[in-house]
Length: 579
Image (cartoon, rainbow, N blue to C red; front, side):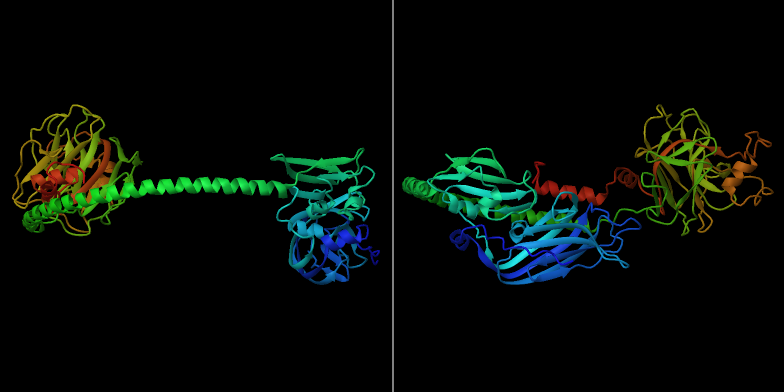
């Protein structure tokens, strides 16, 4: 059905006031229907398909249908209206339900003046089930933009101190400050009790609602901000006292002029004092520059001499060989991966890494690496560890196994003497009792290293110092063959009778499976592998025998290069102060 024609909105307003305040709209009005929420359900079966329709004077626009949009449809569709001298200020918004077999149903409707949209660019607007606006039917979100002129003018500064005046209910409201500005008489604003606000302003932002509409007025009086809410209907006249801010502004301007003159005089006095102080500073700076030039010339002469000394030191620094690098390095705070090569570890029999350390129980757990990638003859093995039980005997801490026949070199604990470290090898071919000091505390973290030189000399170090006696029982160290040699943590393998070789896939695993008992069938053939109980933090293997100082440097993370560089720093800064 066609809607009933809406009479012009401004008819109740006197012609003089209408001509001075309202002007026809000329320009482009863009309304974007974004979405709706909590819509009234008018379809009994299935989910309703909402769309929205706009009627504005002679213009009619409709959105696309949101299929199965239900109570929360989304459109995001813009509608443009070209306005030319438009005075019919009412906009009808209707949300409909699309029916394919019958007439479309009205879900909710709203009829508001166009100035409501111009005063609320982005807002939710309440819909009602009928034009009588009795029952709520959900809300619609509109994004409005007007490019042009006309309508209510914007008041930049009110003569009477009015700040804002919004008339309506909720989001459906209009800024009516220009209308109030022309109604002020004798520095007072009077709204009679027998006149509704819609009659007073000449338009109704929302018909058929009396109790909910209010005028929210904010103004300044006596130098203070005040606010008041005026209902649509009242039992008494409303009289608001105002001030002539135009006259007060003249007083303020005069006070500001006098204040500016006083500030100017103070500024002139300050500038004179700054000029005198600047002349004094310039004289002092000239004297300081002369003194600085003399000190700089002296410092430059000293610097040239120092540079010559440093150049001589750097010649020696460039001749220093780079520090050694390991061919395998395990840092168990980062896992069981080899940090420099491919000899990653495999944890055996429940062995685990806890708290940044490889934990060995001394009963069945140990770790085995992947094979060496290159052949190794001379070597140095190095480890940071803690002893789990200082009374344990014969456990293998860190062993390098040359091939699958149990031939190995490594560090053992309590084998030759209780509570002491020793050098292990199959049948002690390259090792013997070194008579080292006994361990006293199992909580200490110990650094151990063993170097194997080309002539068969073996040296063990504890915390950077030589530990016990050096050994040379064989003229050659044990060769480690690539693709056969592995590294064992926590397990000391032993050489066995050749008839037992090859009965298992791996010697270390076979040692645990074949020779589980510590009972010796032959005193000369101790075939029982012994396990170590404790923790290992880090370990590494070098492909050459390190010297005493290199062992210390590797333990501390320093090198001869660092020490020489520190000597150069002492030349630059002999007092050791930060620069």
